[in-house]
Image (cartoon, rainbow, N blue to C red):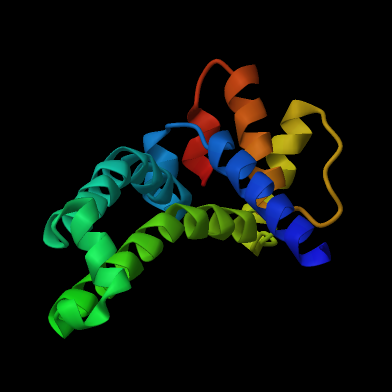
Amino acid sequence: MMLFSKIINAIKLGSHYMDLWPDEPILMAIFPEMRYKKMMSLGRIVLPPVVAFLVFWIYYTCGGFSGLYLLFTHPSSGSMTLYLSIVSVIFMILILLQLPLLGVVWFSVRATTPLNQRQQQFYFDLIQKLEKTPAQNPTMLDFITAINQGLKTFKDKDFLDRL
C-alpha cells in the first residue's frame, strides 16, 4: 500500500510540475521539460487512435467475436502465427499505454532534482527581486515556480535572458 501511495504522489507531482512550465521560447531552448511537455501533449492526441486501431486489428485478424471465441476455446483451430500476432499486439498496446505514465514519472523525478550552481544563482537573484524567501535546497519545482512568479510580476521578460 505504501508503494502505491508513492506512485500516486509521484504522478500528481509530475503532472503538477509539467503544468507549471510556461510556453516561453527561451525556456524551450534551455530545458528539456518543454520539449517533453510538447511530446506528451502530442501523445495525448495520437495514442488513443493508435490503441483503438490495434484493438480493431486484433478483432479483425481473429474473425470477429466468433473467431476470438473459437481461437481461445479450441486452440488447435488457430495457427501459431495468429497467436503470436495477438500476443505481440497486446504487448504493443501495453507499452503504448504506459508511455504517458512514464513521462509523468520522469517529470516527478525532474521536479525533485536539485539545481546546479548556475540555476541556483539565477534562482536566488530572482527570489531576491521578487522579495520572497528562498528555499533552503531549491529544486527544479522551486525554480520553475519562481520563474512563473517572475513572469506574472515583471512586465518584461528580460530576466530570462540571464539563464
